[in-house]
Length: 320
Image (cartoon, rainbow, N blue to C red; front, side, top):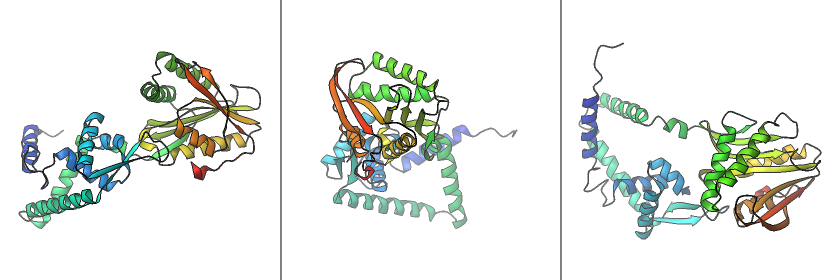
């Protein structure tokens, strides 16, 4: 172990100096009248056209309400425009207007000149030292960045945390969109616990979308829950940050390939009226509405729907 003390206070002092030099304390930032959060938002929207507000919130490390307010101001100023996702109208995707693109170009020009002027005061061999030091320190301050940058994969079968992860996604989404509460959470958790105890059976399987150990989506086929020869498609959900990127279609394709490789006569799923994006995906894969009725199995009165896909019906995933 080194006997040299860690220069914590010196690093803090240099960090404060950097923050002030870059204009984070007020006044002009990046050559604009905008606050730093708005400048960073514009740069990230340019880098990823179609980014969602939820993803932007994670990237900027700001709460959703703060991001919503700054995006509203950027739309009013004519720098950003938003449109509804093709698969889910509740999701708003973001892009720069022509004015916004010009503003970001000016920001980049200002920042490059600012960095170039600073590097001119250093020896050329020190330039790489600056870059390596900043990258090392920034990554150490944000260890979770590695997790956010982890690859997204679809995992087949049980893994630790599956029941809690899928249940948590369902209650968070449906509490917000449909007002479901304790009864719904209990139904999901108990159903998943029972299903996982039967996962060794050849007619049962589950798929989860994973990134850095976190569940971002799921879908299961339960071949024992209904009548003989009937598969039950259950627990289909996808994190908002992944919608419109094709993961819903990929989950559905894997699940239906599993069904079609077994002697099921049909596949049923239950949902409720109003989930238009999900219905569009179901119908694109050969499901048809079989019945609709008033029900309360999820803890409040809704128009429940049963969709059915008969064996041999492929649908058209290109429409999803």
